[in-house]
Every structure is written in structure tokens, then in C-alpha cells.
Image 1 (cartoon, rainbow, N blue to C red):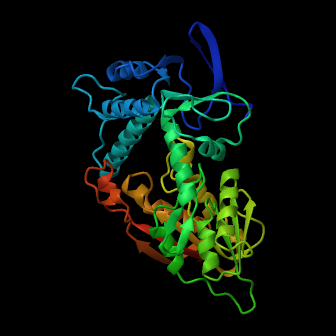
Image 2 (image 1 turned 90 degrees about the vertical axis):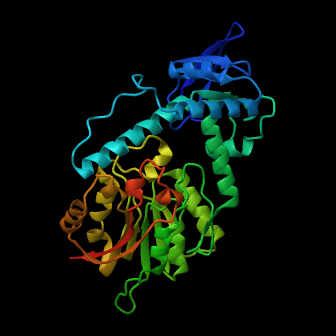
Image 3 (image 1 turned 120 degrees about the vertical axis):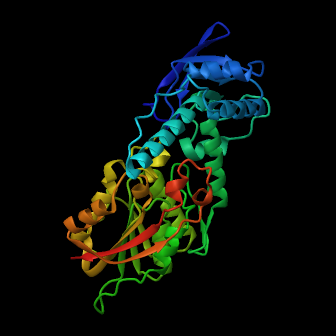
Length: 393
């Protein structure tokens, strides 16, 4: 356990208590109150709205039911005259402004929901067990996310625990990647390649052809699970250097490429964006939405000020072999949300000394793209995912 993690303190049965606070996204509550099956959902809802954390001492499954009941109350529209959050900024007249306003309201609602439901808490014993009736054995899930027990008691939100359990199941079962013809096993905290349309683009785009005898080398920048590096290796690229800075991603990618039999072709290295040298192909799938993340795992989706996108565009000039290509995999969702324009992206490409060789497009197939009830349906229904093939101007 990280010694920098804070301690949370409370009083219970007349005795002072303390435990490690474990969360990568949830703020520690200002106050903590032990709660059990006798606490009504309405009373619990008032407490979490007031900022109190509820340390669950009742039946584990009843705690899950309480969390569901609180979720329904959080999602219930506020009555007229009783807004639950700060009112949104006045709607703009232009379409881009309206889209930005809708997205801001959606993100605010997401953040509020996560903060409130994250105040239902569970205590873990020093060996990572839960001393509650009907509690599951979560030791394997916690070891994968937190590391081996160190003898300290811990507290985390029940909602985050559900995420840890889900991540453990994804890691065990893996995610089927049709373009790869195999499964990728994501680790906790490493974004799962559930949206396969962009992988299909990478599997089908023509590889750049260099002069005879030139080495077949590609860079996968920001590899995550290693899925893109594995796809390139499957396509016959002789050597792939896959980079990342996150230790979990580096370990996850290393395990995945080895499991798939590509350990000789793929080298996973810790690097901030680009490795040393030049390659025939440099590929990057940066976060698609230029706004801050609400949680650590969202950093694979949200890229404040398009920082990673722009860093990638600035790199090919120094890292592409003559005749090579940079492949940028991007959704245009940010454009439909009014967060970035196509002209801006084209200007960044030109300013980096690059030109567009070709663009390969596909439409998303995930359920939200066809769900009119989704708050962002107007943008999602028009979304296009593209593989931009870039070369030196």
C-alpha cells in the first residue's frame, strides 16, 4: 500500500478508529457514520447529500440494494424550484454552444452522481477480506488493483469496489477483439478496447511501403492494453515498440503481447509518447474528448486542451522514416459536442509539417450511438471514427 495514502478517522462504539483511505477518484468524506440495514434509504440520501460518508456495517447484499436505491434518488429529476446543482450557463444560440452546454450539464450530472454514491463505504480487513454477512471474497480483485496486503485496514466506496470486481472479471475473461481474432485482457485502471470499430480501421488500412531493405518498424504511442501493437504484429510488422508511462499499462501490455505470442515482435517500453529512433509507421489513439477527466480511468477518454493529440502531431517529423506514415485514430465526437473544430485539427496537422494522405472512416456500433434516451444522442448519432494517414508535407 502507498504510504502517501491518507488515513480516515471516525468514532465507533465509543472508540476512535482509523483506516487507509483507498480511492483513485473519490474525495474522502468530511465525516463518517457507521450504518446498517436499519437505515432507511431516504435518511441515507439526506446524509450523503450533506457530505457524510456511510460506513456500511450491515449485510453486504443489503448494502448493494441501498446503493441502487440511492442511485434512483440521485437520478430522479429535481422538483421545480429545488435545483440540486448549480444552474447551467445560459444556452447559446449557436449549435456548437448548445452542444457544449448539453455536454457540460451531462458531465456535471455524472460527477455529482459519482460523488454522492461514492459515499457508501466498505471497510477491508488487513488481509483484504470484508467482515460483513454475505460478503464476497474480493482478495484477488484487490490484490490486482492495490497490490498485496500490507497489514493495514482500508476503506473504499462500495461503488469503487464494484468497479474493482468488474475489472477483475474483465481481466480473467478478456475482451474479444474481432480484428485480432483473439481476446485482450485489460487490467484495472487500463482502458478496455470495447469499441472495436477503430481496431477494424487499423487492421485494414494499407501499411506504408518503404524502400527495399528498409526495416519494418512501427511505434504504438500510448499502448494501453497493447491491442494496437498486437494488431500490427499480427499484420506482419517485424518489430513494434509500444510505449506508455502508466506502470499498469506497461505490465498489462507486456502480458497481453506475450499471451498472444508476439513477445518477439513487440517491445513494451516506458516512454513519454515517442521512443528513440525513426519508424516506418507511428500509430496513436489518443483520448478523443478535450476536457478534464473526473476519474483516473477517464484519462483514456478525456484529453484536456487536446494535449496528447497535439503532442502526437508534433512528433512524426522527428520519428518517421522517409516515406513513413503517422496514423492518428480519432473520433469526431468532440466536434459534434462543440469542443473542437475540424479546422483546428487541420491547422494543427499543417503546423506540424504534415499532410493528409488519406482518411478511413467508420461509424460506431456501440449501444449509445443508437439510443435516443442518451443525453448526448444528438452528437453520438453523427459520430464518425477515422484513421488519419499522415505523412511529411
